[in-house]
Image (cartoon, rainbow, N blue to C red):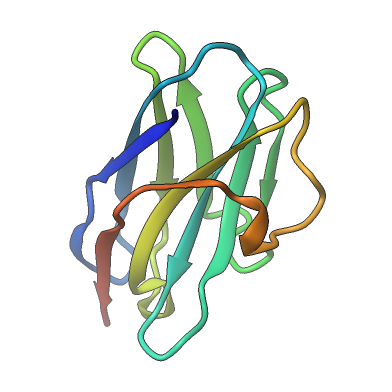
Length: 126
């Protein structure tokens, strides 16, 4: 019942910034964990950041701490990922995802996330 659509990807130089958006529909309450994942060329999909729609608590992968910020705009029903100080290793397809729960589990297990967007490409050049 939840649908997610990412946008905002593109090409930037190292050190630059980019903001990704994930338009969500199908919400009926504030009991969803939402997050961003990415998959670089030749790599497995990895968790980047997550936030709970009710609590607003945020968790980040070590690789992006201090550089990326996850947030939500309830009025627009949109999830964001603000990416600053981008590095070439950030190059990947970025996906937003969600699952229904009163809290976010303290792990990134892909199989837990029930809803996924189509992905948006981010390319960072040196």
